[in-house]
Amino acid sequence: MNQRLSLVTLGVRDLNKARSFYESLGWHPSPASCEQVCFFQTGSMAIALYPMDALLGDSGKKGTVPVAGGITLGINVPLREEVDRELAIVLSRGATLLQPAIDTPWGGRTAYFADLDGHPWEITWAPMFPLGPKGELLLP
Amino acid sequence: MNQRLSLVTLGVRDLNKARSFYESLGWHPSPASCEQVCFFQTGSMAIALYPMDALLGDSGKKGTVPVAGGITLGINVPLREEVDRELAIVLSRGATLLQPAIDTPWGGRTAYFADLDGHPWEITWAPMFPLGPKGELLLP
Image 1 (cartoon, rainbow over the protein chains, first blue to last red):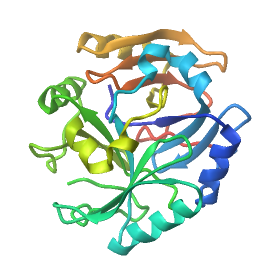
Image 2 (spheres, rainbow over the protein chains, first blue to last red):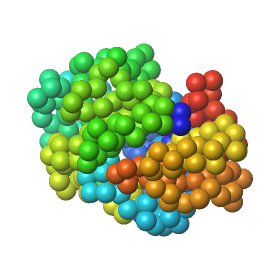
Image 3 (tube, helix red, strand yellow):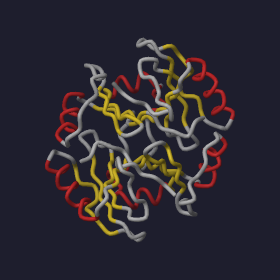
């Protein structure tokens, strides 16, 4: 299986509300979006917003109940102070605070919020992982 | 908030077992990996395997319990028959079948499996989204 990730699909209760939330953060949907699904290009991959019921139907109910503490989605920022600034922005757009910004034991800074459907996002400054010219996270 | 995804962190019960599973699919951990976390470069971003307890601790318990049917992770393949071929490989490595390969109403083919910790993956052939030279999913 090729070492890549093409698409992260987030189940949402209300597609229009979810789309508006991400648009309020400055994201631009792809023209490939339609009434049933909304796509955002994110680097070499894409994020899809998709109604929860449809997601359950497509993937078989069993597998679509994630394990507790299962997954976090991270956005790395190039500057320490951006963690706090970005967190303030997303909270002002209706996100829920999960964990205020803190300095981490590994020398970075991180904060957690949940989007409208509870999907946990992490905003991270990780100085050991400099970002590429297009914001890519490029590991050693 | 920049339109990107830097890191998807998957909570796992046994880091060594989880790492071995992804290595058995042909994935190569980054040298940035250590005893506490395992990183894989995936295009412009990375996937991390991270012990569930630590993930719960880092992100605040509330937010780390994903909603039912919450998230699927997708790998797009360039050929229809690769869906079935890749599915057979991952199942032979210990993954759990969630949904056998089927032709979709939108003209593609897709199958779902869960990794050792239940994280749902989707293998998809989506002919309307040709892949880039490095396997990138590039939306219209």
